[in-house]
Length: 249
Ligand SMILES: C[S@@+](CC[C@H](N)C(=O)[O-])C[C@H]1O[C@@H](n2cnc3c(N)ncnc32)[C@H](O)[C@@H]1O
Image (tube, rainbow, N blue to C red; front, side):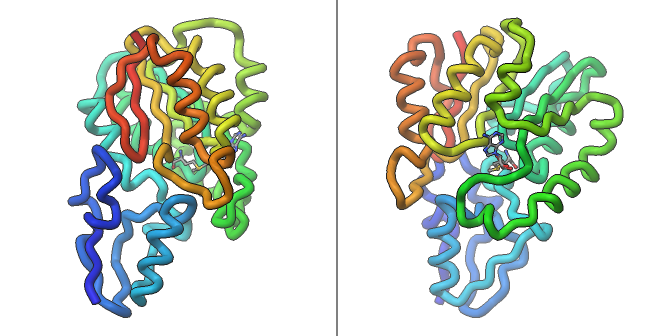
């Protein structure tokens, strides 16, 4: 039995399916996986499992950034050599952090502010993970940037971080929202993020296409749509698919 990656991921706008495993054969181990295992991709994993395909990871942890890296590359022709400031809400092992650090933070004054509880969410794949190890992995691979304060680690909820952040506007060129995936959580993060984003800055949401199976209030889409209903006139849409990418006017 052969299964096409492209058909599995066809709903993902802007994703470079060449990065995906094109095909796997029954019972065969797929050497590198583009699949985000967990949340929406749990279904894909289930499909693969149904076909007897073993899904493996680049590391011991799922890489949820791999399949959407092309969206980052599309929006930011890299490397960015000018001063750049990014905020990431929801960090996990730092796959996105690494990419941002290597490609967008080339100027000596550029920064990435990372915010995560490193306690996971109330989602089945997270229950299976040791978040102490997730955090240690992040600490180790980001160490070169953390030691120079190019990347700032904030271990707290996004709500706590927004409350602690000085009330300045126009702080960030990119804000990536990928923390609490409930509709209310995403909406709250987006509303809090809005004033901190520079005009011309990019606001990106992950998992617009994810379905939880337990109701729309547990999914980002409703929160993103609610944000767009109110703030949409302040943004131009760069792309909508698995993710939503906006540019602030
Ligand atoms: C999908 S992962 C982030 C993936 C990461 N952006 C990447 O591209 O590799 C979601 C993360 O959000 C964190 N998280 C969930 N709810 C949070 C909250 N309310 N505040 C801060 N972090 C949260 C979890 O601990 C988890 O590490």
